[in-house]
Length: 234
Image (cartoon, rainbow, N blue to C red):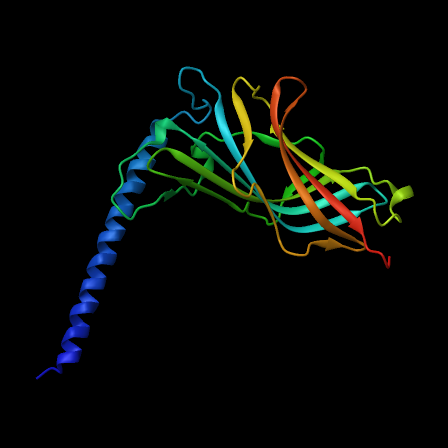
Protein backbone atom coordinates (compact mmCIF):
# COMPACT_ATOMS: atom_id res chain seq x y z
CA UNK A 1 0.00 0.00 0.00
CA UNK A 2 1.30 3.44 -0.91
CA UNK A 3 2.48 5.66 1.92
CA UNK A 4 -0.09 8.48 2.54
CA UNK A 5 2.66 11.09 2.24
CA UNK A 6 3.68 9.65 -1.13
CA UNK A 7 0.07 9.73 -2.30
CA UNK A 8 -0.31 13.39 -1.31
CA UNK A 9 3.00 14.24 -3.01
CA UNK A 10 1.86 12.50 -6.20
CA UNK A 11 -1.44 14.41 -6.20
CA UNK A 12 0.36 17.73 -5.68
CA UNK A 13 2.79 16.88 -8.48
CA UNK A 14 -0.03 16.30 -10.97
CA UNK A 15 -1.82 19.47 -9.82
CA UNK A 16 1.34 21.50 -10.43
CA UNK A 17 1.76 19.91 -13.86
CA UNK A 18 -1.84 20.72 -14.74
CA UNK A 19 -1.45 24.35 -13.66
CA UNK A 20 1.79 24.70 -15.62
CA UNK A 21 0.11 23.24 -18.70
CA UNK A 22 -2.80 25.65 -18.29
CA UNK A 23 -0.38 28.59 -18.00
CA UNK A 24 1.43 27.42 -21.14
CA UNK A 25 -1.85 27.15 -23.03
CA UNK A 26 -2.92 30.64 -21.91
CA UNK A 27 0.40 32.16 -22.96
CA UNK A 28 0.32 30.33 -26.30
CA UNK A 29 -3.16 31.69 -27.04
CA UNK A 30 -2.02 35.21 -26.16
CA UNK A 31 1.11 34.85 -28.30
CA UNK A 32 -0.98 33.69 -31.26
CA UNK A 33 -3.30 36.67 -30.80
CA UNK A 34 -0.37 39.11 -30.78
CA UNK A 35 1.18 37.42 -33.83
CA UNK A 36 -2.09 37.83 -35.76
CA UNK A 37 -2.29 41.49 -34.78
CA UNK A 38 1.30 42.08 -35.88
CA UNK A 39 0.63 40.36 -39.21
CA UNK A 40 -2.29 42.74 -39.80
CA UNK A 41 -0.33 45.74 -38.57
CA UNK A 42 1.74 48.09 -40.76
CA UNK A 43 4.96 48.67 -38.77
CA UNK A 44 5.81 51.75 -40.79
CA UNK A 45 2.71 53.63 -39.60
CA UNK A 46 2.89 55.41 -36.26
CA UNK A 47 0.13 54.51 -33.77
CA UNK A 48 -2.05 57.57 -33.39
CA UNK A 49 -5.64 58.33 -32.38
CA UNK A 50 -7.16 61.28 -34.28
CA UNK A 51 -3.67 62.16 -35.51
CA UNK A 52 -2.57 63.03 -31.97
CA UNK A 53 1.15 62.69 -31.13
CA UNK A 54 2.40 59.38 -29.78
CA UNK A 55 3.89 59.71 -26.28
CA UNK A 56 7.19 57.91 -25.73
CA UNK A 57 8.31 57.27 -22.14
CA UNK A 58 12.09 57.02 -21.77
CA UNK A 59 14.26 55.46 -19.08
CA UNK A 60 18.01 54.77 -19.00
CA UNK A 61 20.12 52.45 -16.90
CA UNK A 62 23.84 53.28 -16.99
CA UNK A 63 26.12 50.37 -16.15
CA UNK A 64 29.55 51.83 -16.87
CA UNK A 65 31.13 55.17 -17.66
CA UNK A 66 34.49 55.88 -19.31
CA UNK A 67 35.91 59.38 -19.68
CA UNK A 68 38.40 60.40 -22.38
CA UNK A 69 39.26 63.91 -21.23
CA UNK A 70 41.82 64.52 -23.97
CA UNK A 71 39.30 63.91 -26.77
CA UNK A 72 36.25 65.34 -24.97
CA UNK A 73 34.45 62.01 -24.93
CA UNK A 74 32.22 60.35 -22.35
CA UNK A 75 31.44 56.71 -23.18
CA UNK A 76 28.41 55.08 -21.57
CA UNK A 77 27.39 51.43 -21.43
CA UNK A 78 23.64 51.68 -20.95
CA UNK A 79 20.23 50.14 -21.44
CA UNK A 80 17.72 52.34 -23.24
CA UNK A 81 14.14 51.52 -22.23
CA UNK A 82 11.17 52.88 -24.19
CA UNK A 83 7.44 52.55 -23.59
CA UNK A 84 4.44 53.66 -25.65
CA UNK A 85 0.91 52.55 -26.48
CA UNK A 86 -0.21 51.00 -29.75
CA UNK A 87 -4.00 50.64 -29.74
CA UNK A 88 -3.73 48.22 -32.68
CA UNK A 89 -2.06 45.62 -30.44
CA UNK A 90 -4.72 45.38 -27.71
CA UNK A 91 -5.59 41.72 -27.02
CA UNK A 92 -7.46 39.57 -24.51
CA UNK A 93 -5.32 37.53 -22.14
CA UNK A 94 -6.08 35.11 -19.33
CA UNK A 95 -5.20 36.09 -15.79
CA UNK A 96 -1.52 35.44 -15.21
CA UNK A 97 -0.38 36.44 -18.71
CA UNK A 98 1.29 39.79 -18.08
CA UNK A 99 2.75 40.32 -21.54
CA UNK A 100 3.88 38.54 -24.70
CA UNK A 101 7.51 38.62 -25.82
CA UNK A 102 8.09 39.41 -29.51
CA UNK A 103 11.36 37.91 -30.74
CA UNK A 104 11.50 40.14 -33.82
CA UNK A 105 10.89 43.73 -32.63
CA UNK A 106 10.77 45.00 -36.23
CA UNK A 107 7.34 43.39 -36.63
CA UNK A 108 5.93 46.24 -34.54
CA UNK A 109 6.12 49.98 -35.06
CA UNK A 110 9.27 51.28 -33.38
CA UNK A 111 10.24 54.87 -32.56
CA UNK A 112 13.44 56.33 -34.00
CA UNK A 113 15.44 57.82 -31.09
CA UNK A 114 19.00 58.96 -31.63
CA UNK A 115 21.66 60.63 -29.48
CA UNK A 116 22.09 64.21 -30.69
CA UNK A 117 25.61 64.59 -29.32
CA UNK A 118 26.53 60.94 -29.89
CA UNK A 119 29.74 60.43 -31.86
CA UNK A 120 29.42 56.64 -32.05
CA UNK A 121 26.58 54.32 -31.01
CA UNK A 122 26.82 50.55 -31.21
CA UNK A 123 25.50 47.37 -29.65
CA UNK A 124 27.60 45.41 -27.17
CA UNK A 125 27.36 42.03 -28.91
CA UNK A 126 27.22 40.55 -32.42
CA UNK A 127 23.48 39.97 -31.96
CA UNK A 128 21.59 43.02 -30.80
CA UNK A 129 20.57 42.78 -27.16
CA UNK A 130 16.95 43.88 -27.54
CA UNK A 131 13.64 42.97 -25.94
CA UNK A 132 10.08 43.80 -27.00
CA UNK A 133 7.06 43.04 -24.84
CA UNK A 134 3.40 43.67 -25.71
CA UNK A 135 0.88 44.04 -22.87
CA UNK A 136 -2.86 43.26 -23.18
CA UNK A 137 -3.79 46.97 -23.03
CA UNK A 138 -1.56 47.74 -26.02
CA UNK A 139 1.40 49.05 -24.04
CA UNK A 140 4.65 48.22 -25.83
CA UNK A 141 7.93 47.99 -23.90
CA UNK A 142 11.24 48.01 -25.78
CA UNK A 143 14.68 47.69 -24.22
CA UNK A 144 18.08 47.57 -25.89
CA UNK A 145 21.67 47.68 -24.63
CA UNK A 146 24.05 50.16 -26.23
CA UNK A 147 27.46 51.73 -25.93
CA UNK A 148 27.27 55.45 -26.67
CA UNK A 149 30.24 57.77 -27.14
CA UNK A 150 29.15 61.34 -26.37
CA UNK A 151 30.89 64.58 -27.30
CA UNK A 152 31.25 66.48 -24.01
CA UNK A 153 33.79 69.34 -23.88
CA UNK A 154 35.88 68.99 -20.73
CA UNK A 155 37.14 72.17 -19.06
CA UNK A 156 40.68 71.04 -18.25
CA UNK A 157 41.69 74.47 -16.96
CA UNK A 158 39.30 74.07 -14.02
CA UNK A 159 39.54 70.32 -13.49
CA UNK A 160 41.88 70.76 -10.52
CA UNK A 161 39.34 72.89 -8.70
CA UNK A 162 37.68 70.49 -6.30
CA UNK A 163 34.55 72.64 -6.11
CA UNK A 164 34.03 72.49 -9.86
CA UNK A 165 31.90 69.86 -11.55
CA UNK A 166 32.31 68.84 -15.15
CA UNK A 167 28.96 68.53 -16.86
CA UNK A 168 28.04 66.18 -19.70
CA UNK A 169 24.60 66.22 -21.32
CA UNK A 170 23.11 63.28 -23.23
CA UNK A 171 20.21 64.38 -25.44
CA UNK A 172 17.83 61.89 -27.05
CA UNK A 173 15.40 62.97 -29.77
CA UNK A 174 13.48 61.60 -32.72
CA UNK A 175 15.38 61.42 -35.99
CA UNK A 176 12.37 61.97 -38.23
CA UNK A 177 9.20 62.67 -36.21
CA UNK A 178 8.39 66.22 -35.15
CA UNK A 179 6.86 67.09 -31.77
CA UNK A 180 3.45 67.06 -33.47
CA UNK A 181 3.98 63.35 -34.12
CA UNK A 182 6.17 61.99 -31.31
CA UNK A 183 6.57 63.36 -27.78
CA UNK A 184 9.54 62.29 -25.66
CA UNK A 185 9.03 62.23 -21.90
CA UNK A 186 11.12 60.81 -19.08
CA UNK A 187 9.49 57.91 -17.27
CA UNK A 188 8.18 58.92 -13.86
CA UNK A 189 9.82 57.78 -10.63
CA UNK A 190 13.43 57.05 -11.57
CA UNK A 191 13.92 58.10 -15.21
CA UNK A 192 17.67 57.45 -15.06
CA UNK A 193 19.26 54.76 -12.92
CA UNK A 194 23.01 54.38 -12.40
CA UNK A 195 25.00 51.44 -11.16
CA UNK A 196 26.38 52.38 -7.76
CA UNK A 197 29.69 54.23 -7.42
CA UNK A 198 30.34 54.86 -11.11
CA UNK A 199 33.78 56.29 -11.79
CA UNK A 200 36.41 56.55 -14.52
CA UNK A 201 40.02 57.30 -13.68
CA UNK A 202 40.12 60.51 -11.67
CA UNK A 203 36.42 61.28 -12.21
CA UNK A 204 33.39 60.06 -10.32
CA UNK A 205 29.70 60.60 -11.03
CA UNK A 206 28.31 62.96 -8.39
CA UNK A 207 24.71 63.46 -9.45
CA UNK A 208 22.40 63.76 -12.44
CA UNK A 209 19.35 65.71 -13.60
CA UNK A 210 16.63 64.86 -16.12
CA UNK A 211 14.86 67.39 -18.33
CA UNK A 212 12.31 67.34 -21.14
CA UNK A 213 13.23 69.61 -24.04
CA UNK A 214 12.63 70.70 -27.63
CA UNK A 215 15.45 70.41 -30.18
CA UNK A 216 15.82 72.65 -33.25
CA UNK A 217 12.49 74.25 -32.41
CA UNK A 218 10.31 71.39 -33.64
CA UNK A 219 11.61 68.07 -32.27
CA UNK A 220 10.73 66.73 -28.83
CA UNK A 221 13.66 65.45 -26.77
CA UNK A 222 14.86 64.45 -23.31
CA UNK A 223 18.13 65.41 -21.65
CA UNK A 224 20.21 63.60 -19.04
CA UNK A 225 22.77 65.91 -17.46
CA UNK A 226 25.57 64.15 -15.58
CA UNK A 227 27.83 65.99 -13.15
CA UNK A 228 31.36 64.62 -12.73
CA UNK A 229 33.89 65.54 -10.08
CA UNK A 230 37.64 65.01 -10.03
CA UNK A 231 39.13 63.19 -7.06
CA UNK A 232 41.05 65.44 -4.65
CA UNK A 233 44.15 63.26 -4.76
CA UNK A 234 44.35 63.16 -8.59
